[in-house]
Length: 546
Image 1 (tube, helix red, strand yellow):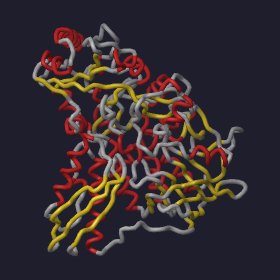
Image 2 (tube, one colour):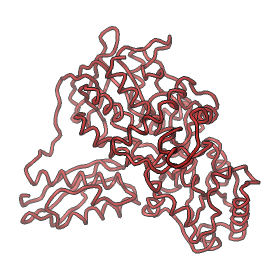
Image 3 (tube, one colour):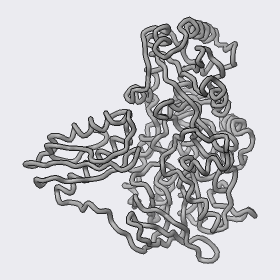
Image 4 (cartoon, rainbow, N blue to C red):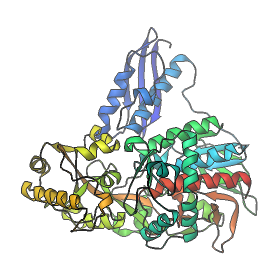
């Protein structure tokens, strides 16, 4: 590295992070964040990463230098530091590349889980693939996913002795969606699950832990060992697979529309990071831009009752693609079906995964009392919480639950957990009546041992532990906007469909940008299941021209 002061940028959860490093005698002697918008709980992690840069002579990595519990902040800071190091080495210009008109076989719009599954599959079939991502980082909402991937009759379930069936999974999904789901899409989703799990495992994914989420009859939520968050792990696997298959990913490149040849779609219109336009011609376009949960105006247009709720979505989830699809002749479905997640941490609006409840946690209200079957579907649990005082509740669990789920360590690192060595002390810290909470916990422990929830009918299989192992933990939660079930209408092959049922030639879509699979309510674990199963299907069919 050359002596001097050098700058670089990266994209954190809150936006662009600008870092400045000072280099003396090939060593970083100072590293500062000159501009950033990360949340309060992420500041300590940001500073910790910057501290790790002091004394360094070369590039940093998220795996070695990141801070657990702040994946996106760590990635953004490290990307910024590495850009500054590259500039100091004279290896790379600070400005981003400007693209001009070009062509390829397949264009994928969106570099989240669905987009990269589609890209990897299409490239594996010998097609040239360009992925366009308007944000400065890849991953989209997949980066925040903590639960897992639902699939039935998988090789992993068989190894663990879990008895499940595709038909039971189908029934659970239809029931969870209040039968508004497209049954053809659900059947295809269920049937293609096992082979998709094996495909991801072959790419290097760890899906060895299988848990249970609300609305599922049995354990079918596949996730990394120990219950680690699925999203960051999945994106790491897909990023490496994309590189292996020579997929070109362009971040900071925003699609503004589709190119039409009179009978179908033949490419995309794009804006460089500086706003200059260009076009890419392609034999097929796959839209994988995610939902519109961050577009509060659009959300409240279809669901006015959600006015005032926070969102768990990344800032790029704005529903841009719907306009292009309608202009191309495609149709939309179920836009008014929007899911709120029951357990968003009250202050920083961090998603607290449903797996915490699946591994044994309970919910209590301001009176220290249970008020719902914690493992009911998300719409039921969220509605029950909103009816409590101040529209919030407290998630309560013990040390045994914490040890059973690695993702809980993320919440501990983020500083959102309250803890104490007794139930009564925990109640005092949180602001609940100690006697009431103790009575609730004692009653739950007795029912758990008997295998019967006499109060709310929670299944014995989801009452994993009696919650009697000190220390005890609590986190305040409230519902927040999570998933948009409606979107682009597709068939089981992921063709974009017109209102008359015909397919728009050359146009495919996959993931949360589509509608119809989840009906009126999405089951936990079906969201990531959707993006991997249907992303792969879209890539396969686009590559084959089917």
